Amino acid sequence: MAITKVPSDMIQVANNVTDTTVGGANSAVSLTFDALGVISAASNVALQVNTADIVNGAITADKIADGTIIAADIADGSITTAKIADGSITTAKIADANVTNDKIVSVANTKISGNITGSQIEADVTLNGTVTATSFVGSGASLTGIAGGFSNMQVFTSPGTWTNPGSVTKVKVTVAGGGGSGGRSPGPTDAWGAGGGGGTAIEIIPFPSGTNVPVTVGGVAGTSSFGAYCSATGGSNGSPSAGGAGGAGSGGNINFTGTRGGGGNNGGSGFSPPGGSSLLGQGGVLSPYGTTPSPADISGRGYGGGGSGAGAGIPAAGSGTPGVVIVEY
Image 1 (cartoon, helix red, strand yellow):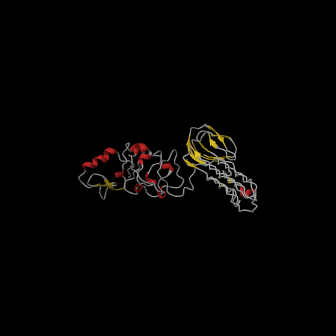
Image 2 (cartoon, one colour):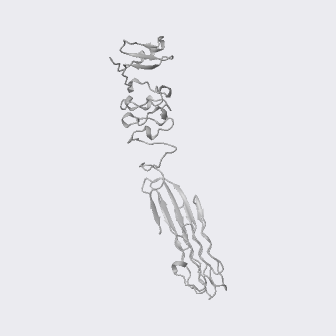
Image 3 (cartoon, rainbow, N blue to C red):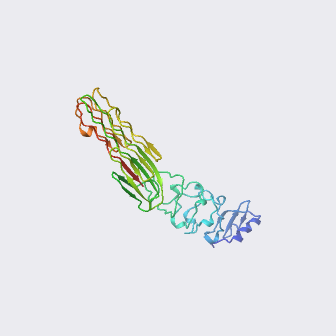
């Protein structure tokens, strides 16, 4: 005969048992108790624990031998949060590959102490709701629906409005001002200063959903901005006596100043001085006396690059490049 359920009042009698063994060689059921009255061994006993048999909070770490929680011992859906004392389920208590969907109704995060490793979780276990952890081990290549980071980008090369799609609560904005143009040489051996590089500001901005932000994009030597959050001025144009100053970012978590354009050289060798650079753009190149650089060489590149100054034999000055506003969300 098999016992399918042991009533709690029957187990409590064990506290008064003086013999270490109940039953014997001729008994259908044999239970062995330790010195504290806890069942340490049994034969001819078939036990199944269901939710109704467990007092709320009665499952504690000291009741579970390491590695003894296996799928066959758990009735489907019988593990609920109320039955488990906080912090009582540890990695050592769970046999490998025995945590499966059908065994779990709900377990609050306060009930689990330490790490549950991949070897203890059967494949395709689904966790509903929010999983909170200080870190995850592994590449995470198979994880989907993980919040965090930025997965979209909108690049503004002309003025406009950034429109929140409705679910975005944080954006990263990079704003760059336009680069200045180089000065044009008035004399056969003169070289005017080159244009300065545009400034740059980078900011992480939290704001409520549904917010629309006006965007300004500076042209040559112009200022770019993302609403009132952050902005960046353009580099100055070159002059006869000096290269143009670099623009400056403001309002960002990080702000950068563009580099100054190369200085003029009136009455000198007449070389074409290089343009200043921004964080996102490069200035026009330096051209030696008597060379004939292409417009692409002496103009700024990227976003916010300053143009080269004109020199003897190089009558045309390089143009600066416009700025940009990049929104990541």
